[in-house]
Length: 193
Image (cartoon, rainbow, N blue to C red; front, side, top):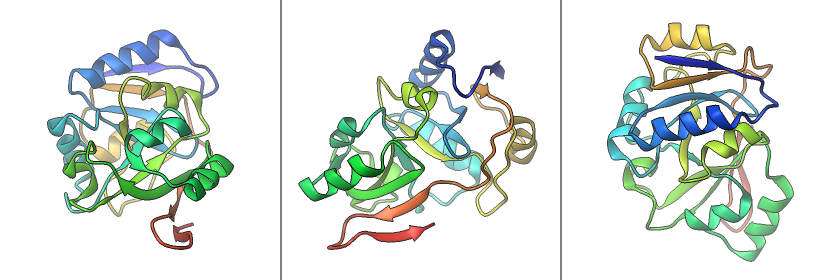
């Protein structure tokens, strides 16, 4: 397992390229977001996505969210109305996951068989650049229903497994994952604050 150290505020092209190569080859990465560390895999690689579920010991019926590089890219994975687009533009990039109606291009394995998808555009250029070629999974790097930890060492100790690549920016200040807001109904609904 390779661990690459950098700064949360720095977009190191060499690290981004290496991480994208690992993702393109079916690997899973551990990476920082604007909230907590996440586990990333190419959403179109079913084996890699399954590996994320295995690492987290998460039920395959529980959906994973998707990270895309910018608000415009959300259209590739979700159907977005004019009103929804306005909301997304007001809040993203930021510490939010928005539930939207998925497009057929999104594999069932990501969504737990539902017709919805959670989408994130973090307020962190390093994370967003990881998804510049294809969307990646974004789920907190912890065992399901266990504490979210702020450092790579603590996370790896909890997960007790290896990933293809780790991007270590040191301790993250947040121990809370993104807020989740459902935009599929007539009014936005907060699922997780």
